[in-house]
Image (cartoon, rainbow, N blue to C red; front, side, top):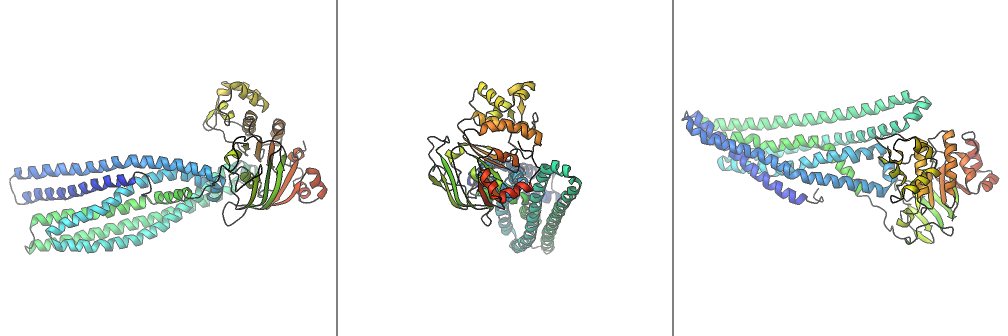
Length: 573
């Protein structure tokens, strides 16, 4: 935590305020005891006015210090969590899909939204509680020792025993909380996956069957949560029991001392009043410890993401002219790619392309098509192998010049909560309205735009006007039409979620985009292969065949078998 900017200055201020608050706690006990003793001795009412007034001022001051500590802490926590969220999002962008593949979409989204909120609660509470635990009990103990050293010695001896017991319960609670957080991550991933796959599940008639799976995951999370709460409540009960028992023992010692006339009423009452405040910091810390375990786990998970290395050497390619030309070439030699260090999803990939070729990437589901597209887009870095772009060998394709040379069109292009014009001009925000209209017309959007009341100014995206899958893909195509400097097109199954009729209509708009571009088109729809110059056939992460459609047909190998297996899936067009 001390790596966060500003935390040392915050700690200094909180330490000073906690020291002042500890002094006020002692004064509060003293003045209250003085007033009670005066009443006990039947002294005139006027003798208690000053002690009670001082008690009131000190009591108010004690709680004003608490407000001051929150007032000092909040700006630091707010700034830190904002920066943490920005750094987290920037890191996700740098790491690409690999971290999402490892952690799960739901977990990453939850980590970036609710996880950061939990971290805010954790930071807001933990620093002040630790300082309170480090200062207040010992100042109170020192003051008690100046009054009666035996009681102070007992409090000193009992304190480590309580801490040891709390450590044992705390470790048990931590283990339960870790399992609960893992269940929370699993529940988040299942929730997102269920929402994504619900249309498919309904079409297959499996939505009710899958509901049982969702129930089992939810029930598992409920049980883990209840187990964590059981430990937390047991810990709180045990702490309250031991601290109350310790205070009761102190009261017995003081009572015996009063009867033996070895201690006066005033010091005895001060000690008895201060005893609960001596144990209060550890009780507060224990209660808040259980309340902030999720925040601690979320902080650990976020810091783990932030500590992951990102690709370096991003300026190895010349940036003077990023436009892809007919003389430019790209080759991959013995490239292995994986989402984690222990497993390679793509193994020994070898191919080379040059100029404006249309390269089809085909294979069954799970064969590695999306992984290859993610590698070509620079979202994934190879584990080993050699990549050469325009004659320059690079360790990965997360190169600034390469990034500015391609357009990436996924299965579901992201539409921002903005105007239709802003979405169309995503890559070229300075494009003129006339250029945007021409690009929209070439992508087949003109008729749809004409039906919109506000035309290009219509708000689309999240929380705004809905857009169909075909319209979203046409918007992505218009982006490619609008930026002629990006001559490399990466398609990751762009028509996977479209019906055949919509796909054929979209195909007529997409084919003109392929001209004068290097195209990588990953799909499992076979009719697209008729438009390709070169085909890469993937099977279980290996490039089993490559060549022109005619060459592959003549080989009568994996490509032909794949066409036979997928026959009838899409009409030839």
